[in-house]
Every structure is written in C-alpha cells, then in structure tokens.
Image (cartoon, rainbow, N blue to C red; front, side, top):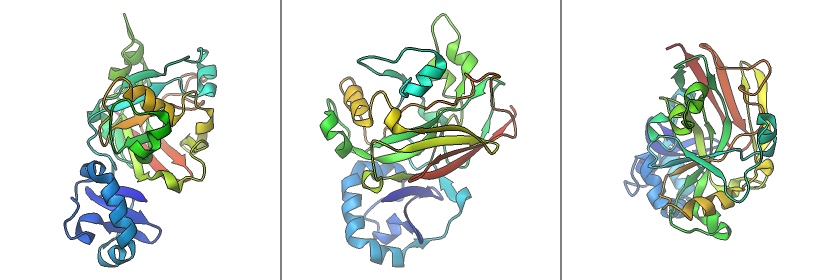
Length: 284
C-alpha cells in the first residue's frame, strides 16, 4: 500500500492513479493524512477488502505539484547520526557502539516532496535518508516486534546548516537541521511488504543531474528494528512519528572541494520502491 497526501487529502496510490480515502470509504476515514496513522491497521484491512470498488468510485487525477508531505504534522521527529559505515568513514569519525547517535528535527521543518526551500546561508548541506513512519506507537518495543509498529517508509532529506549545527560551546544539531523546509519527505509512505528486502533498500540523490549519494540500508550500523527498540526504550513513540535513519556517503560537506547548496540548485532524492522527490532552492 502506498499512501500520499494529494491536495492535502489522504489518498492511496495505485499504478493507475490514486483513490481519495474519505470519499471511497463513505466518511469512515478522515481526509486528514496525519490521522491515518492513528487507525493504520483499520485502514489496511479496509483497503484490502475494498480496493477494487474504492478505485472505481473515488479516483483522483494528480501531478507532482499536488503531492504534499505524506506525514504533514508529526509530533516527534528523531534523526540518527553516523548510521552508515561509509558515511562515518568519509567524515573520519568512529562508528557508534552500543547506542545510536540521536538528535531531533523540529516538526515545523517538514515540507513536501516537490518543495522550494529558502537557503539561510551558503553553508547548507544535503543528506538523503530513508524515513520510518510509526503506526502503533509504544514504549519498550522489541526489535523482533518493531515492524508491526511501523506504517512504512518514505524518503527524506536531512538538510543541514552546518555553521549553526557546529557552533559552540556545544553542537546545535537540532537547530541547524530545522529551518523551514529542512525536512522534505515523500512522495508516498510505502508499507513494508512492498519491499523485496527490508535489509537492503536503496537510497541516493543527485544534485543538478550529478550523482552524489548512492547507498543501501544494508550499510546501516543500527538496523531499522534496532533503532525502534533503542528509541522506544527511552521515549513513547507515537502514531505518525518520523525516524530519519541516517545517510550514506557522498554528502557535500566532506568533499574536497566542499559542495554546498546554492540558489537554483535541484536536488533529486531517490529510492527504487518509494520513488523520488525533488527539492529546489532559493536565495534568502
């Protein structure tokens, strides 16, 4: 199942188009995309039983500009640092041991998969990421049970203003990564059974047509189930929460010469099963 926000309404995307969930269900489910994660299991059961009739009764025509963030108002956004071995190597940093490096991105930074983002400075970097969307929340979720608490995966960019991120006396990761539009996500949330191998999911990006990142979740230090276990050991995970799971090698800041985002740049983030999203950048 592939869930999107089309014209700010909850829709399920098929190969031949999309279905407006509120109209197809006769109002049994809300049009608000964020509320879907509160009733995720019910939604999946309804769709499995009604896909054919729903597609015939509530088809939606849409283009890329109609797609908004599929999780528009998460209550919590967690992000994981140094979670790909090749990225830690390019940064010259040791791999985390025992526990992941965790910081937050503030929810006001969320935007959609075809957004225009204002650059606050000439020190903004890109990080292509797989993003976990929580369905059934909870506390102390075991890694063995983690996928039953996950609605699906989407794409994300952990955009980062590096000067703010690293200014002292201690780093300001959350602040430097939470400017408006610094958390683009989309285009859809894809349920786990759609992936051929949940331990080997492609993720990458290109900048102005040049490939920059090309990785796979198989290079993660902490797997997605391990991240859910470790985060939920401390906090209650809530329906619709997001986990940015880390980035592979190829970011701009560690390159020589360094690559930063400029006004007019076009950043395309991709994953085979999920699709792609395009972010463009403007001057302040």
